[in-house]
Image (cartoon, rainbow, N blue to C red; front, side, top):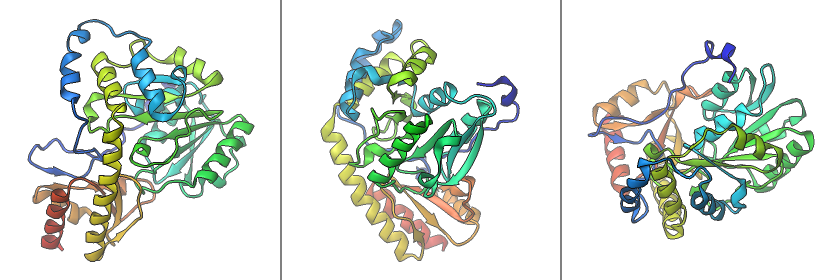
Length: 337
């Protein structure tokens, strides 16, 4: 982090509501968790009274099996954002340029700026056409947040190869990739993959994630990561969750089914809804969404104001939850429109 750049940086808005009585569709969190998670968490209480093993052998092994890489390539972090910060921090120097997609996760630009770098914003669906050779890093998000679309497999692989040939680090945020059956970029030359466990496994407060990287970048991330970079209970629960293949498969089927039900209901009500492979949909409401957001909130349903994403002026993002949650949302929309 560049101290001279901190004063010019700002916080980034995110979804999530702390109202226990509200239906929160602003944060993209699985409403279910793997069986046995609470028991694993409870069992980890005693281990939390001492420092965890900083090598995290069980967590690394589970993560390696989960994404298809070697355990030595896994760098444990306190969530996917910590992996993103670490990757940018060891790569970007003050004054260097970074390719950043938009509309997309606002923390990419913030972390680049905190490192003293300059984000060059490119439309997310045009970024793979860029020449990466003039940049210290390129960032991709797949599925992209908030649009929900994924890059084509061959297009993304070709871009990764071009980045590697140019000596440009490719940071691939795969926070939502677990909701799809697409392959990870984990283990690809010159690529740092950031993974979050909190969304797919319904545990955002756990703060568990990891990076996957090889070569020189691996040595740099391992050197720079904080000691005990992942709490003991988070490591235990994370390893347990990643090994539950049945839970992951069931979640993918359910999210696909419920996403299409949500899209159909919104389209029937006249909304323009983007195709999505993520546990959320981006919705064009045709006007400033403030009144709609307020009306829904007043009826106990919280949506994500997507106008805080660069390039969006009349959109909301809606998380895919349960059938009951979607029916409640659609009922509220019938009242307010």
